[in-house]
Image 1 (tube, helix red, strand yellow):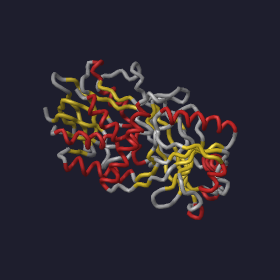
Image 2 (tube, rainbow, N blue to C red):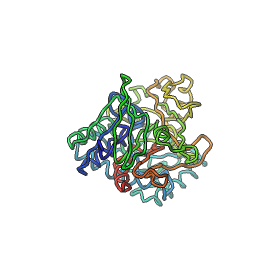
Image 3 (cartoon, rainbow, N blue to C red):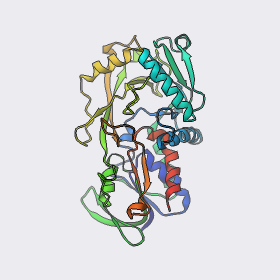
Image 4 (cartoon, one colour):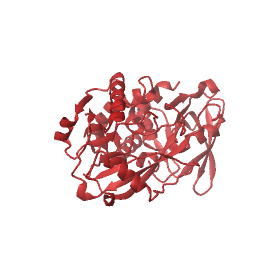
Amino acid sequence: MDYDIIIIGAGVVGLAIATELSNSKQNILMIERHPSFGWETSSRNSEVIHSGIYYPEDSLKTRLCVEGNRLLYEWCSKYNVPHKRLGKYIVAVDNADIKNLHHLFEQGRKNGVADLQLISSEELSKIESNIIAREAIFSPNTGIIDSHSLMQSFENYAINHSVDIIYNHTVEQIQKIADGYNLSVKSTDGDIFNISSLIVINSAGLDSDKIAASAGIDIEKNHYQLHYCRGHYFRVAPSKSKLVKHLIYPAPAKNWVGLGIHITPDLAGMLKLGPDTMYLPENKQDYTIPEELKEKFYESVKRFFPQLELQDLTPDQAGIRPKLQGPNDGFRDFVIKNERHLGLPNLINLIGIDSPGLTSCIAIAKYVRSIIE
């Protein structure tokens, strides 16, 4: 065997896995198709450290987010990754919002999220005088992070612990062989070569379903097909950037598609709005921001931030979530699975790692280690 472990995909989750496994004294290779790490979902998101209140209590999303929140803050402190434990207010503007807010508060308590508080509009106005709400949840352990610096810290750690990383290479095919797997790998020059490994970890993000299919897995039968769901962001004018100090989220709908267009301060002290949710008709990486969305963002956020004006908004960026949940489906959990039951032992698939994947990344890595046989 050329390697003990091959990890496909150098997003934040793949890098966290490489970091976690780098202490195992095994030969590890990471393969990434882009020129560097985190070119897709990992660098096109809200950069929020979530607390774990939104999802069912028995789900991987909840368990790994709650654990990952603690682990991520510990890592950031130890390795000097820029971050800030800002705290988040989830606000209810009308009666329907209040009902959803109370449901969310109870869900957070079931999930074991510490220190959640229900606060009145009067209490909120003393803290965030420019935010209008009838009631709010305060989540003190929600924060923001520099995702690029986080990924850089993982890459540095992995390389310093003898993980090999090759960029600009794409995995074309995975074939089961006697003791492990043979991977057909293509370079940007078009050269194709084979590498073997005892263990293969598919952390390919937006292409994770395709990688699973390349190993012979029927992704339709196993419900591994991904849906690309684009989220857009708008930047708020600097003149309004000091008007909000915390993360401000609306009370969410119960469809699990997204958390609602929210206000996020960044580490530079500026504000951005987003993301929304727009399922794409095809699984293509199209990062266009339609101009007509500006009005939608304005109307959504002005409900609780009345000082916002339409001219305050400029397009910022877009990201794509790799969702297992289709536009009319209910909640879908992360798939993190050793495919032994399909006759593919130690092929570890990570599929549908959308939010809260960034927060959960270190906890996901530890979970992956626990299911390797």
